Length: 597
Image (tube, rainbow, N blue to C red):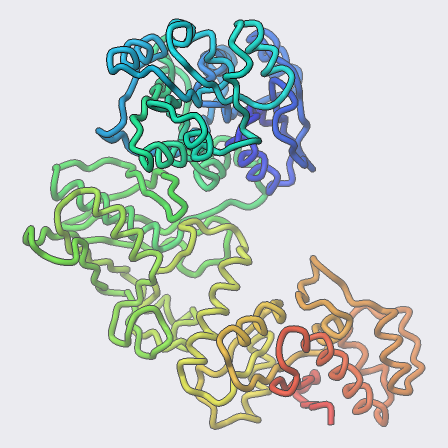
């Protein structure tokens, strides 16, 4: 069981990640916290002292702690590390993403240091964005100078301000004005805020002050782990995003998620390139390297080293990925200081080559997609020197034969791909992305018609009707009929033929544009209605599979029934794609084709 301490944006994100598992966990907040719609989590409210925490962990078989509290909640951080040590529990700290320190900001070690720096620089009118609990800590400043505090517009915050005898007319509220509006109204000499990270609105506050040329004073976030608590004998891992959190939970409590996530080839290539660069420039060979993902979070990835290269073994998790277990290598060379671009990316052995238009890069380019290229560029640019990185995948060429690559016109190897950097098991996002790429290539092929099918079987039957169309004109939609038709509309594809087997057709006819069995089953009442429209009065009370209808419908009514099914399918698709440009073919078990005529 997992016990989370939240009440922050990171707490909400933690709950979202844990809800994906469908397993029970506990989510604790001091007060009401954020309004969360927890299905599998149990919300605990109220302050918990260290002894209370220890008792709860014992009574509820807690095996993993997650600290998703505010970065300035120092007492709670200390308690959780002590709790982890006493109970021999692993601890995940879900921290925020923090912008780098810049010289145009005045950094303060604590509140007393802030008071000293504010007064030494002659700041007499201050807008404090540090919260109601800091009024007492800044008393030494506001008793001698004009100061406005922005606080939450709620009774308990107002009561705290009154207890400190802070003037009510110098309180401003989050709900009334944003930082820019407050600056325009108050005309402060400077603003004071905390290093609260991206989710705490730090960047927006700083940018508002910069716009008006105001000095920005910032209270540095407390160190984690706290200096006062030795944590060397505690299993603590820090993450700053949802992907890293899930991977940490999978590591420390494997049974919590029924299926585990993996890494994209793009993340593997980036990690290998970072490791190769560290060895080249610094002589370092760490076992893990930090990789910044497209969403800005950082995860650590294990690496290995060979003669002139670094490598990552592709980890697919529980996703049915043919690239799982492949070695992804990176060789890095330093370029002249004036070389542009700063990071040059090449494809080596086992990385495919684009041979057709329709991709982000022209034919002849290595099949390294846009997001992995950006990941490589962003991560390697931090080294500050021009670099050439060559990505290679031994066994990539033979593996590619089991992918969509030959159909897409990618020859000689696999693609280096990935949108998020992480592979979620049986990821719908990844499958839909692959459909989109196939549709884009079909469009770029110049084919007058794109033929979409549920799978290889239906495609084999429909291909016989369109023998002159290029291979790229045939696209598998799996269960995502609606998504595929939306893509066809967005891409401006002139004519579409859909091949569909009866099982998916009866679901589509009843309005299920996503035909996966976990989202919808065949509507027997609607099937009966269609049979009646076709003049059939068959008993379908024992029907379990739609394909059995072929044996129930009288032979002289089959064509009429197919016409009815196709008509209903056309009606459902009309809201997405122009019915005058969509031809639907219903496919029988032995390859018979019915076009609704």
